[in-house]
Length: 50
Picture (tube, rainbow, N blue to C red):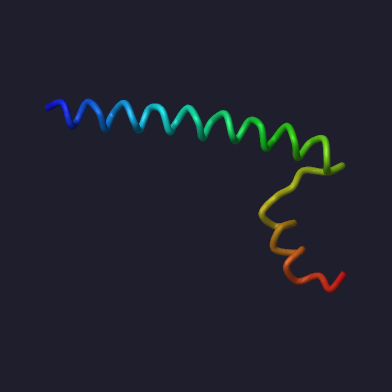
């Protein structure tokens, strides 16, 4: 039973870390890019020869 509780606590912790990282990356991206950085833009960058 303790193992399940430990795993649940770990998942909760990781979830909080990921949510904070998403928030941070969205904030950073909004300061760097004049338009939202989307999956489509990322795919386009891989194909651009610039």
